[in-house]
Length: 177
Image 1 (spheres, rainbow, N blue to C red):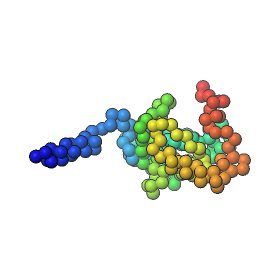
Image 2: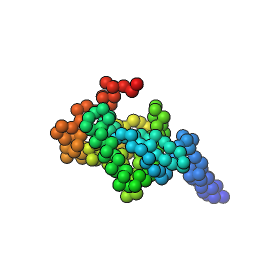
Image 3: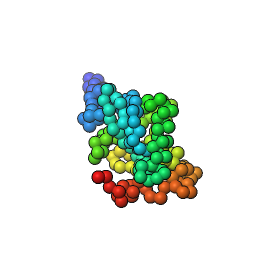
Image 4: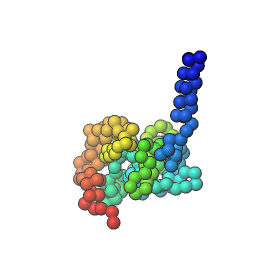
């Protein structure tokens, strides 16, 4: 009898964990929901269409050059657009612990059909820098490796004539109006 009560209790806990929504996650798209990228704003912000709604979305864990950081802001945006176009605009959305930033953008990891993560590709290809803000740090080590690889290979922002200052430093000097 005691064993069957333990099994029932364990099964009940598993049921709750699997089927009751996590309160904060219920406010946004569930992990790995399919979305269509309808606009690329810059190297780390897109607008997604999901369930007949549009979400301005910031890619988690990375920071791309600002558009004013010429020529790298435009190059990062173009590179992100190329990645998105190669997938026909279709991505899978994964959220983390914090769902929105202070600008009310959805925070997300974007995945392609072939299981490559867009956020990671931007760093691996040398178009973004590591920018991890807790608690959204699920892939921090993976991103650190991607950035290290691009830096070692002197790709794009890491090469000769590359980015002169990190995007966060640029934003401090040029705050949003």
